[in-house]
Length: 277
Image 1: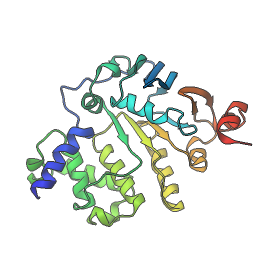
Image 2: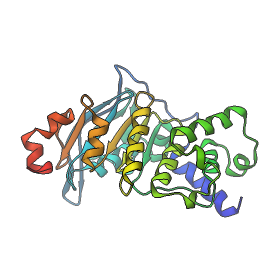
Image 3: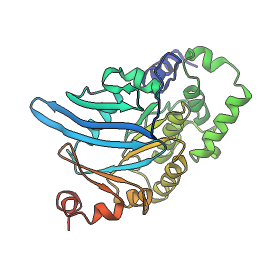
Image 4: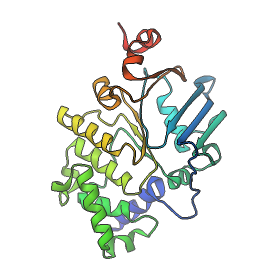
């Protein structure tokens, strides 16, 4: 393991994926994982969020859609501590006020974010990437030299199967397809057992087959984790939402509509500002 990769590993864990005992643990009362009320954010006079409110249930899979500039990315930034709201309430569980927490503490409490562009260690194999993510708060040098326990080997095998990469475990990550790199990064997030996963346009650039398998992956995670999926691919959203899951539509920094896919598709306001006629 080169010094550069060791340093990258330390940065990786500090950035998003560690779970340390000192981090606050959310308490989930009444099955609410995330509570957002009247959230407002302005940038140089521009109102990016103008009173956004919604809740996410424990184990829920929620799709969030909306036109460009609707506030989707700003919402994600607020949830992860990258952007500080000007006002409003933002709670993870019933006890953790995300407005008062650092990015690192939010990640440690169990919120993981997947950006559109995958970030994996391309010089390492698929299994080594997962091993590094599984290392938790141990130092990279120790983590990469230590022998894996039986439980850790089993967990890596489980993650490989979950993210459709079991046959690619010894492949160098840089040789993976775009979709496979996305799955690997999701696996790295899952290695830290997050309670809430934020997934930003996860199927952008994927083939049809990769998109279908990604939908299968997210549906398999429902109930084990809460998931918020921001996406523009309406066919993909329709697959995830099915007939009963809630879809949230954002517009101008507020919740424009909320309901099943069929309900939001027939909503006149949504048709006007996003879906078109």
